[in-house]
Image 1: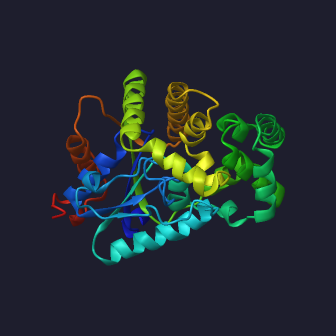
Image 2: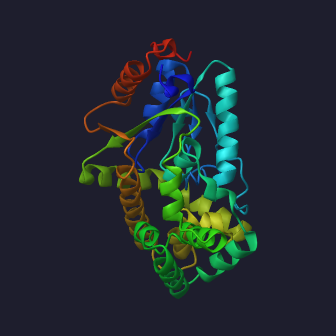
Length: 325
């Protein structure tokens, strides 16, 4: 028996934004008796349901969901904190005799759960706040990105200069440890994790994915995106978490009268496409990912394929088709 057979099985449904991950994870849970654990860096925050495209009651279809809307948006929530909270959720789901299904597009969070990540234990709040403050202006963002490129060119190539939170984190890791984030990740990937994970990602033709992204943004507007941004601005327009959510700064600029709402919507769609490109780059570099063509297939069909792969790989009774109901 391989070492993996002795570990808890953890299916993971990943991929770019708007690819249909949540619907597939829900259908998989309904087939195998599972519960969804979100791996989305924005869905953890309260008051940002529309901005983060968090699944509502209808999308959840009665399947229990965890790690949604439990962190105040003014709070700094790290990958290490996520790992601790998510692993606690996984243990609780397993103790109930259920199957935890990790679902999301934040590759760092997925790695935090499925891979050893020693570097995330190192943190300095004062240093982080200092770096984030520098990144509040376009010039500052370029300066931060240049700093990262000087010490960790691989991370700089992976991260856009507007992704201030992750650029700052990569600089912080290097300053604290003297080792780049890229090298930490390389070393950690050589070590075994705690689960027998199976990573699935949904693969769409690029133009089809972009159409889905545009439709997603239009739907977010119908669901109250502008009102949600207005409420966040009234509460605290400077908190860093909301500022990192795509759609916040774009819609906020329109509400301040700096640009038209039409322009803000165009910017939001483009920023979301850029996010999808970064997510695709991240997951395509992960040799564990099983890519499933998604165009023309239902979430139920994709979930069935995932279930069959899981059954073939692990051959354990939990992967019989059994309803969540």
